[in-house]
Length: 402
Image 1 (spheres, rainbow, N blue to C red):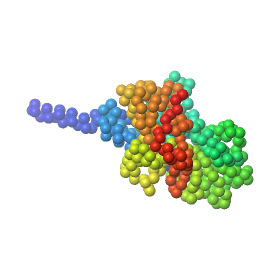
Image 2: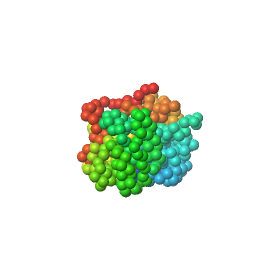
Image 3: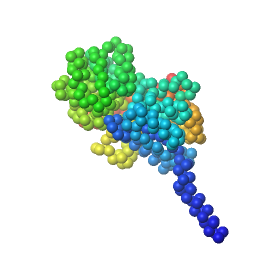
Image 4: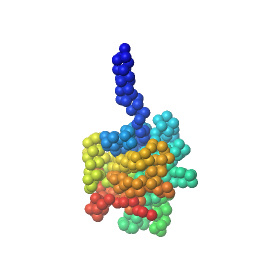
């Protein structure tokens, strides 16, 4: 009888170790983004970059000897859904951090839930300038970012159009979302700094398929170039709309011109489009080659092209930044993770850059304006717009120190 009791105790212990106890011992990290719909090429690429980083970390023992468990939720680029997901992740799933946010509007609507719960958020794609500044007046800010904010991108776009290419008659076309409106404001400010007033500013809604009205106004105003702030599907409608009118003008816009659903839907009409990029799918360093090879092997994207290389790389890096903070904190407590992010002791080698003290208490932006380069759509892919940038592609651009 005693022998049977001992066997039962061993069996119970084994069951707990392999089942419930293991589940309780995971480090839960939320992954929030649009995995369906018009923004999905960004969301899925980001999610897959995150998955790849977690697979690597878990195969090497996890963090604090605990595996990472991803809690993935599709926000469908919908603000209300984003809020609901944030509440679920905080109150039900008990995540220790959240990564993702593709759409600026969803980020701004949702991250208050995490801020109040003192749970760090790593925005790895959303670029609205205000995203990390939403809670600046509060004693502690739990919102971080490792993407190039629009305050960086807009001056790059204007520099490319006005200074490098000499266009003076500039049209702005943007969508009516928070992303588009905030981007339009940053573009207008950057143009004013160069003494340029746009000849026309036109907006459109998500899912609009006819840009004839907006394009005719730009044409009648004598626009020499179209500056854009929108998402891939609508950007493609701009390119295709110009082709229908027989009026082809250069498109220079935010990084979303690199999305697969812009490139594929616009086809030849999208050739030559220019945009800022933190990462271009080229194996110009050993780490980037390993990342690209692993991504292509794991997820097998069409034509060996990552749908949104920027999103994938930044998603991947965001996990390693959080992992470094949790390791340094020796804890999954939100306050201690935030404090560690603000004072990381060790460098974090990433795909976009090597993160050397990327954050501080007053600076939650990992990317400065010297890191992005201009990319260009060519033959269905995004490549370096300038040969000199490509030749120096293996040089790791580090964050500027204040």
